[in-house]
Image (tube, rainbow, N blue to C red; front, top):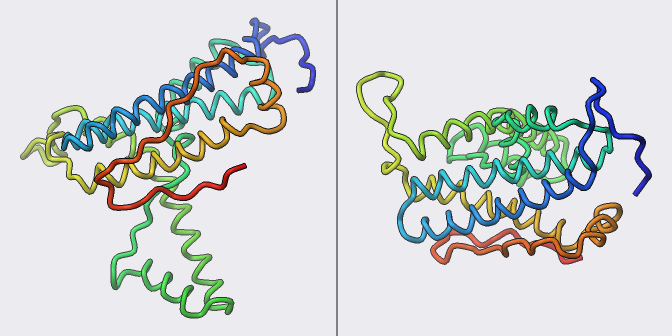
Length: 236
């Protein structure tokens, strides 16, 4: 890893050591895995609202880890105050913590027509146009997801009035399908993070080699009742 200059922030305040950022990254991934373990157990027990809430906390915690990892990789000095401010942005952590999200394509929808066109006319200009439109839809969905997930986390834990003021939103009304969709996407994301951490390369491998006493990360535990298998990951 390249040598770093004297670590001071923009205001002249003392910057945190690079090792501090690396530890924060690792501990956040560890906590994300623990939260997803508990979410899986609750999902199996039929506690879908709380399972969804813990899943969303796990996504946010993983996002915190990715932000800290990126700060460590860039190497620009940062102060504790800057870190605290950055990590106080919940939607930002949600965005950083989720690389997969659902793009619904019900029968007869515009999205479904793009999918059909891309598959039926593979390799043609029409297929490429359809794929580009799907990519645009996915990008737009990705922009909305962090804020939606943050709001969903609140709904998963707390009873609140709905926007009309005529009824109440209850966590116990969370459906199995809703909770499972969130959980499986989060577990697939965590699987990818595990692959990176357990098979590090480059500067990350060098830095982790200098920290042999670091804790092991929780393994991936897939729900036995899940309707879908995990996304295969290549071993390196």
